Image 1: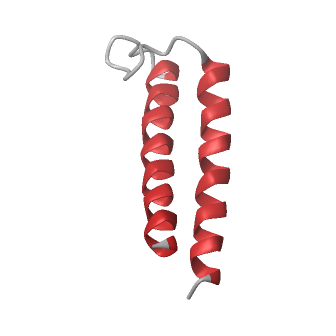
Image 2: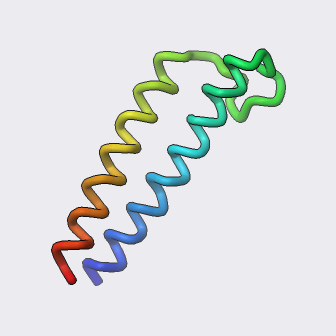
Length: 67
């Protein structure tokens, strides 16, 4: 069960990385209408990217310890 929870959190963090990364990139490219959240806040995108990356690292390292 703990391995499944680690993998679930890893998948969730990767989805957050993709979502907020796409929003940030599309905001910089000038495609605010096509961005997932219309590129409303660059600081929010950066913060969520940092925290999602941290969550991905923590869940991967925890999964690796449980092997």
